[in-house]
Amino acid sequence: MQKHLQKAQDTLASGTLYIVATPIGNLADITLRALAVLQKADLICAEDTRVSAQLLSAYGIQAKLVSVREHNEQQMAGKIIAALGSGQIVAQISDAGTPAVCDPGAKLVARVREAGYPTVPVVGASAVMGALSVAGIAEPNFYFHGFLPPKSSERAKLFAAWQTAAYPIIAFETPHRIADTLNDMAAALPQRRIMLAREISKTFETFLTGSVSEIQAALAADSNQSRGEMVLVIHPAPPQKRDALPEAAQNVMRILASELPTKQAAELAARITGENKKALYNLALEWKA
Image (tube, rainbow, N blue to C red; front, side, top):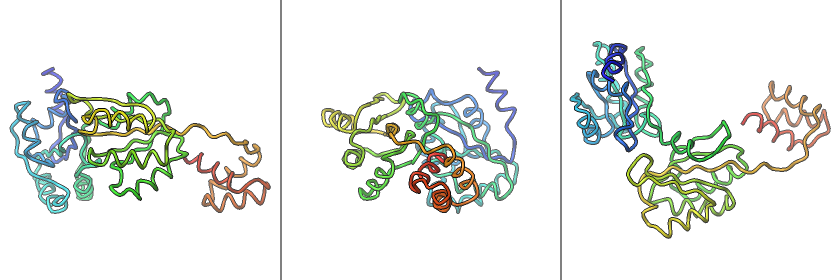
């Protein structure tokens, strides 16, 4: 192990910002490469220095921590760029998971890249991929939404738009909103199969799978299931039965859609082929998806 750790450290370059994924719960989920970067970094940018100090302490790492949060990210970017300019190795971490994805870091990365310094990802634990890997979904494509909106009206619009989604959708939710979110989901997606992944990699990790009403019943029966970090996986909508468009019409639509906006292409294809404009439009949306 020490050999691989040293090899990872030998590849680190000065004047580089490393975006380091940290464990989302279980401390053992950190990678050797992440440890190599954190051990050698001259400066570590942390979302919450108190949380990050606990992680570093667990691995016996002493490093200079600076707080880079959403509210001071732009302000701190200048200081980080100056540190890179002096040849320092800088690491960016968040409280858990990968920085810049539903966490601070994206603005810092953009500023550093604009200044001409390299940014390098150090991959690791992911709640999104962890949840998807145990959902039993075979489709190769998925959509990650991040945190669901706090307002019920906004969630309702999203769920309505996802009623015919032929791909899985992954989103984050908070304990104090999960009941309301499931109520909104029950109204728009009553028959959809979902999975609620909770506390992934932690002591009280659970995965609840079923219809929305079944998940609601599970939460009502055990209040502990409404606590902790949550990931929702919405399974794809069942295939809709519809008459296939003639191959000739599809070919016309394919050619036009490659050159024109979808709506305009559908209107023109309908006039050329005599087929239903909405069916042609929906077909083009399926291709894009």
